[in-house]
Image (cartoon, rainbow, N blue to C red; front, side, top):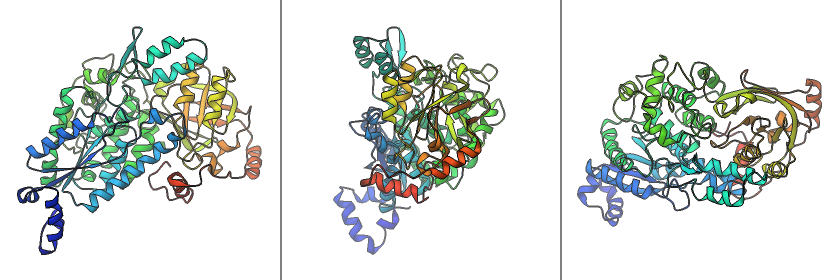
Length: 552
């Protein structure tokens, strides 16, 4: 066993004394030691129930003959961090989670790991750590939140963000806004739509590192507790068989993930996280490859924010196995990929038919013939940009209009809420990238303000920051190179025409090449906004080109 290096031989005596100080018996020390990474905290709704998940995992580990040992991981609530400097810390927390988990698992040589995850950066951070450490590992999430109801309509947290814009536009009363606040998030769990947290929990299932149901069984259901117990039991089998994350998360597994991502209409942030996880596996994913997969993968689901369906609806319609079973009819899924169940993907999804064709469409009647995410390139984004195509109104698939340029999210929000953005405009928010932010903030507030103001079908938004999985509309993020690196988005002037063609995968600044070259020659780097602390060190890392898998 891997833990023998700290348990066996005469030189292990001091370490054994410390293990005894934990209350471990000789019988326990002889058994496999299983590290359980607990992301439980009292500030993130998706994590407030993880103590129950951890307890269930511990029971499962013990039932199977192992010894559960819990250690913590941090987690940031993107929704609570939104709209202030806290959002600058959200994405970078992913690296802290991966690094600290690596430190704990190497310093204390556990025989296996159970990653108890839930929300946006926590799930990919732990998947990155699992790949990096590469000892038998399995993921279990806390499960999605149930959706709420308000005046006869399903609502989620994204409904509240959009309601802020509606209120400022004078189209909603303070009483209704308060009523929505009180019912939009009715339970614990990761927010109820196909936002980033649930996207990545589904991806952990598709990649094969979590048991079926991990992405969709709601947090409040007892089935989630049973799944946690099964997860705890299953890690002992993985340890015995020495099945490791990189045995499961192969290049073919990531192709499966991209296909299912397109079918589900996942968050654009999956285009940040899947390449980062793949990088830790020694696999490089080019963003442009997403378009190739999208061409052959129909969009089968319109969950919130693209539609009203929630994760509970997806679970009741058959969950991820039903989506994958339907996709398998195209003959493109890699059905022989291994999974933590001990079975192949094909064996896991066999017989899982769609139970509600209004939630999971059949392949011959999709919501869209192409996948839910598109990568756009052009002279404004030479290295690419990302849009959640499934959440764009058909009328905005092609759009051209004058640029309204802002050098921070805060200035853009003030303009939108102040009624200074008009139909046809293209809002440009720059210097919000990994280096320029620093930290690459999510732009849920400005997109929600646009939707809430009734401009979702007439105004586009482009940024070198990123978008929340809850964003919808013609919102194009991750524009690269970013403004802080002198990318073309830094050269946009107020009033410049910008052309967006999502069907053709292009993003064009309608300015002659000679003029762009002149602007580039005159461009001067800006001084960093943050000069001390972790974000400053992070920005320097990005500036030096030592990105690793981060944010490219």
